[in-house]
Each structure stands twice: as C-alpha cells, then as structure tokens.
Length: 235
Image 1 (cartoon, rainbow, N blue to C red):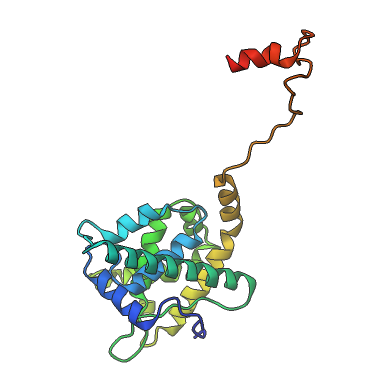
Image 2 (image 1 turned 180 degrees about the horizontal axis):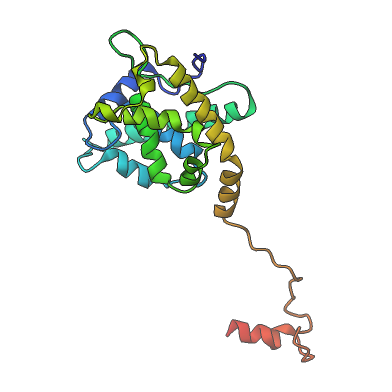
C-alpha cells in the first residue's frame, strides 16, 4: 500500500478532539475519517462549494456549539485540515506520490475505509457538477468505483455489497481508491482553474484617456469639458 504522507494536518490531541466532536453530531459526517473524505471530494470537484454549505451539512440539525471559543476552535481545525489536503493533493499533481489519510482500523488492525468513502460520496453529491459525467464514462468510472463499492458496504443489506469487499485484506481496494483520488484531482484540474478564474472579480480598466476638466469637451462643442459634459455629469 502507498506510504502515508509525512505532513500531519492536525496534532493527535486535536484530531481526537475533532473526532469526538463530530461523533456527537447527527449529520452525515460523524468521524474525522469521513470528514477527510468529504473535504477530498470538495477539493477535487470542478467547481468550489461555499464553506457555509458544507459546514451546515457537517453540523446537521443538532450541531449546537457550546460557546464562541468552541466554535472558533472547530472552525480553525476545519480550515487547517482543509488547507492541508489542498497542499497535499496539489503535490500529487506534481509528483508520483498519492494522498493517504489516516483510516479507522478494525479489530485486527486492518484499515477499513468505508467511512472515508462515504464522506467522499457525500461531497460528490454536494458539489454535483461534473461528477455524473465522470461516473457515466466507462473509461473514467474506475477512478471512483472503489469509493462507490466501499460506500455500498455501509448498507445493512449484505446483498448490496460488492464481492470485492469479501476479501480478508482490503489493501488493494484502498490502494485503488487513493490512486483514483489523485486521478480525479488531475482530471478536474483544468475545469477548477477555469471556474476559479471566472469567479475572481475582475478590475475594470478605462480604455480611453481620461479627459481633463480644462480640456476641450469630447462632444465637439468647442467648450471646455468642465463647462459642457463635465458640468452635466456633476449635475
């Protein structure tokens, strides 16, 4: 399996605090692993999702914060981890490395990945744009297929589970999932750049030379600008 990233977005104590906080919520993202999957999908998506949208989704209907200090701490942790994933996924785009988050392990110490995949698919549904075409394309679908399989494993009906999930060792499927994540990030790179540029406010520049108040008016009246159109504009 690919080696873990050296960069740790949060300290272990912060991660434990954040994980415990998420577990108390009633939204679709109730662990740090699921949050990581959600953020990865939002960062990969071709168009950005506003922070208030995904924060409301994370908090759910019962996400009451104890006080302003706790609210600030949670917000800071979210921003730090989100930005850390941005940096690491950008690195996968420039190098041969892949992003491997910390996953929950089962009783045998083996990584599970189902909560991460479920969080990722929550992000796919939230960002929406671009994903249906990727999933419908048979040449691109393998990038996201492991996430879909692991999310289906959360279904209480065993009949919905993929045969791949019956393997004792899921490392191959997890490896495919994280390689797929890097491939998805690269696939939407051009669209993200275009959409980001379109969303950036543009400075409007004056194309013609500025007319001085004592210059001849541009309307051709022969009067000074301040006595003609300039006076009208002031009025």
